[in-house]
Image (tube, rainbow, N blue to C red):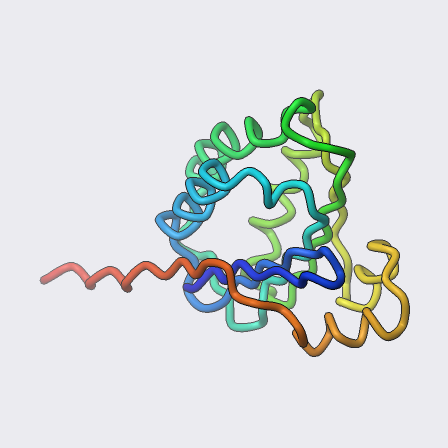
Length: 160
């Protein structure tokens, strides 16, 4: 899998795309990056799980461990204002794991980011209060600059 963290300067929006075979290593690398560069938390986020994303190798236990690291990033003293994080999932195989991630986040008592799952990028853009022109840019991934890419090499199949 590849996790691609991008930023749109004009829209002040981060976009994180998830594609290919999902690995815990990439998710943890992304969390380590966020810990090292917390200024990116001051922007709204659009998280897009693309149709080719496959989360078969990520366990709920790995997500729980990731949650421990990730939730610490969203303490109120680290954020200028309440942020929004929109999720759009085009991968049927990744959707159950994403629902688990979002459900455990919703159950967190001290959340400081409003999080929602949408069926389309257009719906997410409406919630992020983007106008028609801005939403079109986002839908085309236009104007985003890549900030960081996380890509773990595929694991080798066990020898028989």
